Image (cartoon, rainbow, N blue to C red; front, side):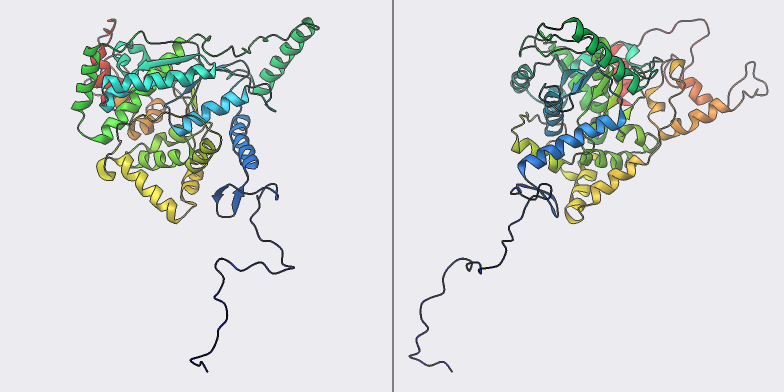
Length: 462
């Protein structure tokens, strides 16, 4: 029993008790090399050291490109860079893959495009100029050809941007292996001819010149105030944030495709991550775009004909991207988006993003499950693109995608009392005509080109 004068000795020592002799240390180790100290925990039990995480991250990027085999040697590829973490990481992966020290060197010719969306997001001219200046500083260090375009340039686009080109993508005729063998043969032939001399760039492969010497499309100055005001009024006329985000995505896509076609790029790379594609899939379902999920979330999107959109970052989660950019000092520029500081229930996009991210925090396999589901979707065949311009409102609906094949398979049925036969899918024929949806153009008359305002309002309907 305890007594009043009992001596309990020295006080208990602070800190953890010393390890017992003979027991093996249980410090965590890297799951890959089993030796390094882990610095990143991607998932429960997946702890990587710095070097192994970098090898794991780079391998995922190269594996996606190598598995799909859509980008051929010597092909011009436009990198869509927004300044955010995912697109910045994509640009740096391409930069490292083109270096001569890379084990499996990338062999395409890259270029970078940045779309200034400050007018749609309500930025002041001073803030927009500051953001563009920061973008230029990073672009000049890359050594790639770069293009900076303002969103106001959509008013100067011709109506031909709405046409679906009948030209097949580059590389659709031959196979990837034949193209690679031909490229390597050209390298070997030119290498033997220049034996004993200094190495020089081969055909289909451009050596990166020092920063700032590549050809670039630098805007002469800020866009005209009239166009900026017109774009602000146009976005102000759209009532909901959901419609504004869809409208902005449509205009941005048309601008990127226009620059790609103008400068001879046959592929466009976007920085959509696995997390972003999972959110996009659920959002598209909520917006009634289920018929286009395979195109919107797959690795490639061939709906535009001569320009193919690819997503090489689709296997990387936002957590992996953030860790990689932090560990290896990948520069990025924060630009406020159209939904910055908006409440969660302001749009379908924000609501679905908050729902999935909260669910991912409680169930870590949520994003991967949704993402793997999107891989099982089958794309519809790309037919009928050479028929002429398509109505944006009709092609953006699931009903239009489902009835397009039906109207092509049904024979024309004459209508009683009508002078000309009418097909079953008459709505599709009217929408594929040169006039606006629901209107008819007399035979033999050339339709007048759409004005810039009619183009913008047609894009609003999507």
